[in-house]
Image 1 (cartoon, helix red, strand yellow):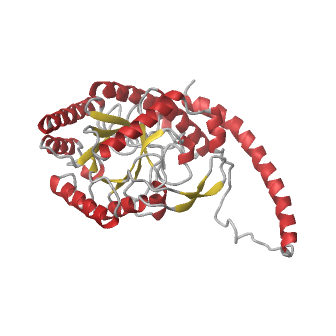
Image 2: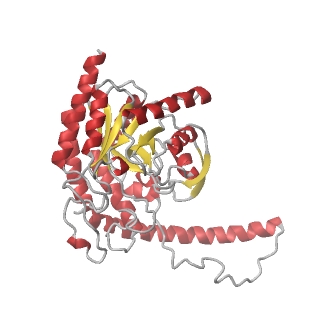
Image 3: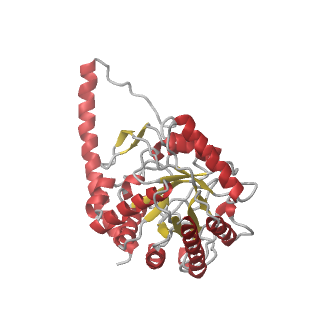
Length: 408
């Protein structure tokens, strides 16, 4: 059964349960709170007309299923757990220099079609088998998209691509897709946009990132300090690495914030700090920043930060070949430059991000006619196709081999 079809069946069943649970909790809480108010000696509330004062711009609210309920129906499997655990450890080993391989995060700019995502995952599985000695390859699985103004906010928000915003369906289908991909032995990476959705794929994500639009957000930094995965922070949209470096410092230390528990209730979350937090370079308003000079400047600042703070922030970077690191709209020049630096002995480059899909380019989504979309083509940023992805991986694998031979 197609993932969206099966997810709709699960949604209907879980929403019925969630509605009953919510009603029970509301009844119980209302009675208990009334008694507590009287015990504390506070008077009964006055009758106040709050229309136009409270929820003045809210059209409606819909119950959302809890992470715990979803996990009960779609639990983490042994295969998925092993995939995630092993990949996290390998990534951490690469970041701290205990493994000389290169981290590769590759996949669609955004996931909008679960069936196409599974097809792409088969390709990733093949590439992992072919290049596993030199590259730690993860699949980019991004179901949420940050927007500066407006537009499709991602698969979790609008899985039917028609503006219906069935987020319960999106959460279920996203988890089901992630389970199937990791069950194939393919670890996934994703960008985090908030502290509420991570619980819905708990145990299934091997690598987290915070994007350029969110890197200065205190909440994103606090979340990064508590994620179980290694996490990268992209430089801000202006191209400066300062915000990403500051985010790494912030994520390394303990924080307390309001987050979501598995049962769907808000909770005060206290974190340990995340020593895997590292910088991702993605270019900026003045152009690319994947060159050796830019990378050297960042690593020197990181080294000084570690001396000043006593932290152990990874003194290397991941290079995003897309976004503002594209040259004339192409990712290949960034890959060629990175490969050249690695062949030259650079150990500062810990990984590369590639926006890749079944077919090259991108297409525009028309919410009135989502069925007209072509299979395997991005609906957000342009991607390279499988053939060019193979070429890129071969180039990077060969570069790692040369560096390894030089150091031995």
